[in-house]
Length: 189
Ligand SMILES: Cc1cn([C@H]2C[C@H](O)[C@@H](COP(=O)(O)OP(=O)(O)OP(=O)(O)O)O2)c(=O)[nH]c1=O
Image 1 (tube, rainbow, N blue to C red):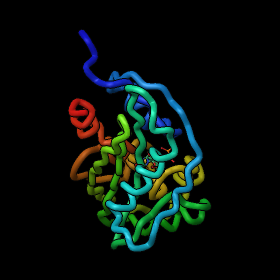
Image 2 (image 1 turned 45 degrees about the horizontal axis):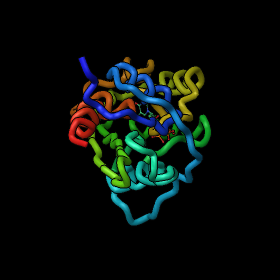
Image 3 (image 1 turned 45 degrees about the vertical axis):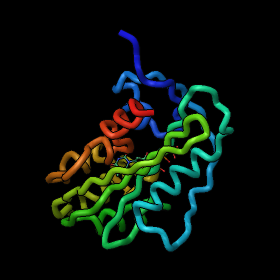
Image 4 (image 1 turned 180 degrees about the vertical axis):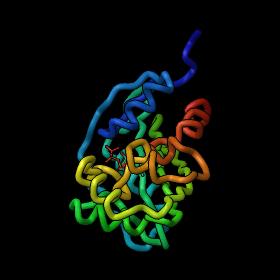
């Protein structure tokens, strides 16, 4: 069977995004660029995710032939506050205490740069954490060091498996790439 999807350049160091693309059986190669992930204050959370995903794509030369540059950015949002990656383990504990017993939004912005055009979209999932004990939080942070994760947790790791009651929306969006939406967008390029 011919693969109808274009070839992808995945501009992401995230092992989870790489694994999701692999599981989707999509052809890709990885090219990494350094990008400043700061953003202007006035943007909404959805706009922030799209803004940073687009910035990551802009780091590429736009003349890449037929290949599509795929970039993404995942943020966690609670009470209108954006939680990025924690700076220290203490900061991670603080974030998890904030998420404990509450619902929050996970937004992944995606940018597909193809033939000089920036195709952007995002997905939002709601994640419901039960009340976590202090011990569950500190032992998770000590063992997993979730400093590379927005909101200080991985849904696919211990704290997600034992602490998340339910989610509304896409699971893979929380992991870092909304695969169903991505597939539809790639088909339409
Ligand atoms: C909320 C959540 C986030 N994450 C991850 C997804 C992202 O990798 C990371 C958020 O940081 P991002 O800046 O979106 O991505 P990244 O720095 O890991 O990779 P790159 O910029 O090179 O693409 O948090 C999980 O793995 N599980 C989760 O449940």
